[in-house]
Length: 367
Image (cartoon, rainbow, N blue to C red; front, side, top):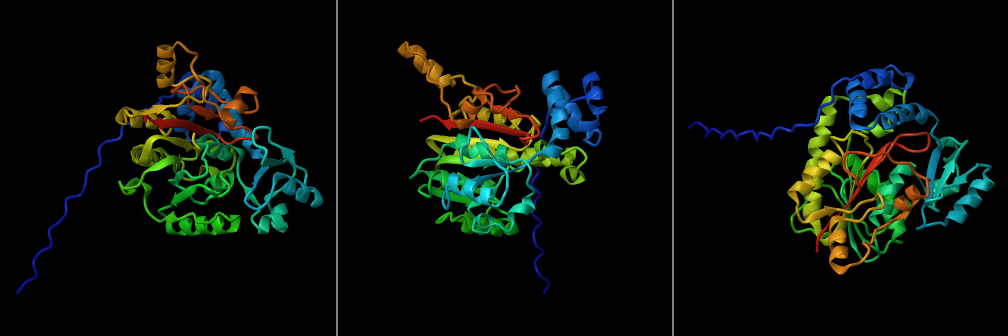
């Protein structure tokens, strides 16, 4: 008797993803001819030239060259040590360090190499975490508080997860997601080393997070092309940077944003960030998500009030309340630069000697 034939399952057809395209222009030709853009993919140069004001586009291209001199940066892990403890240890090791005006726990090491830290007790004992200044920003904007339910959706290797744990002194109900098993293991190792206890790691695709879960705050630092981390002349930083990668990342980012907004509690906040400066991964993705989730709104990070706050203030005859955090205050004080993008209220940090290129947005679900 012959075996019954297995029914072939129909292959799911993904809807077409249409991303903004940017053609070559006279400006992009000029930018591409510069030394700091010599090895950049042409689609990336065309996008920068088309998406930003000419002076800002020039600033970004120059930033990819300046990134070659970017110093080592780290933060004190306040679950185990104070910033004063770390400063004293660096002094004892003869390692010069500078403070960061907008984040007292952060340090810039202008002359050191990463290898200079490997033999120090503060490194071995998890009292510091090596992290770029730009990647320290999203947890500060998130503003997690003790007792809240917090989700880090794409958490590995754990820099932002452990930073949230430190900022809340381990008193938040923090959960981390990571679908890649080796990366999840690295995440768990860093959580243990940094003393971030009781942080469950869900080894799942965050796009498939169960509908049961709801969170007060969500950090979605989405996988991206990494265009903000490019260093001119550094082959490793450019490896695999193609339009195909952009399309793959953009599709994933939209699915992650959709799930993140759905998982927010009423009144909950979401920080969306990428280490990319391409609008297709940033404001374009966010706008599509906001158009779908009408119960969520953008909370501006540029010193202007949200739409709902503007309406409330008008009805009450009051001045609107403008929300601030360490990053908005740093920008207002001139310690951090940002450039205008296609969605006012969101931030694009241009690449520079001190900062990786980064995108950050704050969203709140209406109560």
